[in-house]
Image (cartoon, rainbow, N blue to C red; front, side):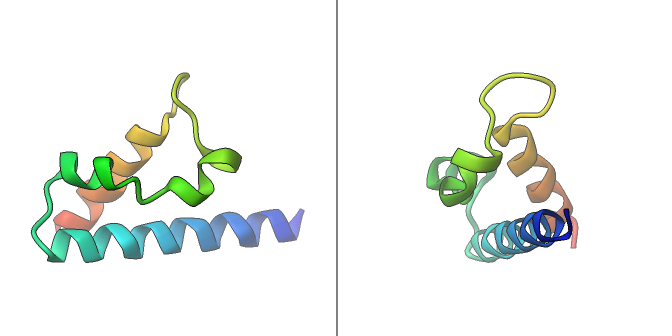
Length: 68
């Protein structure tokens, strides 16, 4: 429903902002993964296996943010 979509959008925006701040501090991808920027969303949206994992999500956000 609309609330779920808004919550997901907010999660993506918050995690993007967190990763962007870490990149600006000079952190590497491995350091960012170790910091677990998704930790408070992992129980709802996280996955450690399957076609789209949390690590893959963090890597995709990192690549998008690091290019700018």
